[in-house]
Length: 225
Image (tube, rainbow, N blue to C red):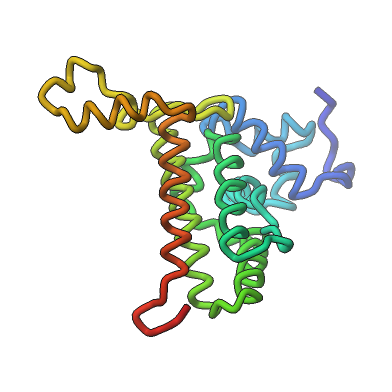
């Protein structure tokens, strides 16, 4: 570990460097390990130096959410359609959250209205607006997709998500055969699911996302596209 620098020697310290160090620490040791002192140790600076760039613990936690969520940005401007843009965004966000499972509880609990997150939303709205969608409907679609992905990962995280690989939550695991004796339809569905090459969580994600995208294409009650 490098020796701690004095206040006048922190020229290379930036908000981004602090957030990267905090994310790496959270990935290794969990959210309970996060403190300005520990992050300062990781960077070889005094904890007080961090406050020049991240003014509070809340700002640090919001920044962590930003670090993970903006890994899904930018939306693919060359996407053939708004459906493809949202599909790519959803899968990119899923990958980002699964890569940082220890941060998922923060993403679930904090709105994290940061400049980086606002830029991500602005880019998404720009892509959807260019496809002819009204800004308010486009915003609803972005919120819906984001909420769906975060909720999906939260369920997975409840049943242990580690090392970037998803493991089914308790409520989603295959039901043992002896428990299915009196539920023939559930038994049939469970056996069919086991025969599929991809995991149940993968299939459910794709199935629900595609249903959502199809629904977005249906006219609203007020006639909007």
